[in-house]
Image 1: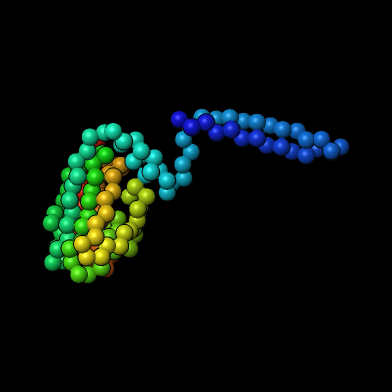
Image 2 (image 1 turned 60 degrees about the horizontal axis):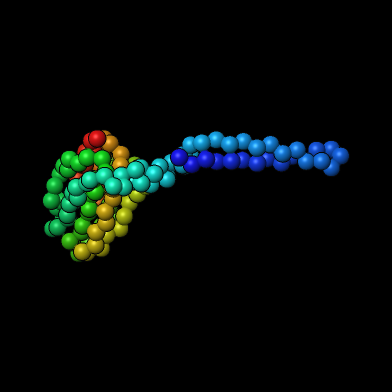
Length: 137
């Protein structure tokens, strides 16, 4: 747990300065960093790697069932450049800090599954190419 200390200095009439200090404990992360904090909590936990491959304009799985802290690895074997996006088409939402990722032929990327629930991942340019992944505790 991080501690945050804050020092506030205020100039007052007559040339003096009054200082106030405050200290608080807690984790203060902006929304776009929340996934990073969750991924850090997965360190040392056993995990499984789930493969989502795209070949001939088709994903190898339409649904993937995973547990929190597992890893989703997405690989593009097609010639077409893929813009893999999380969430519903045209309403993309970040998953563990990633909204979309470009993949050329034979490229892949991995993401730690930190958030529980059901989520979509698809090619922004070819919406039918994608999968639903469900993450449970």
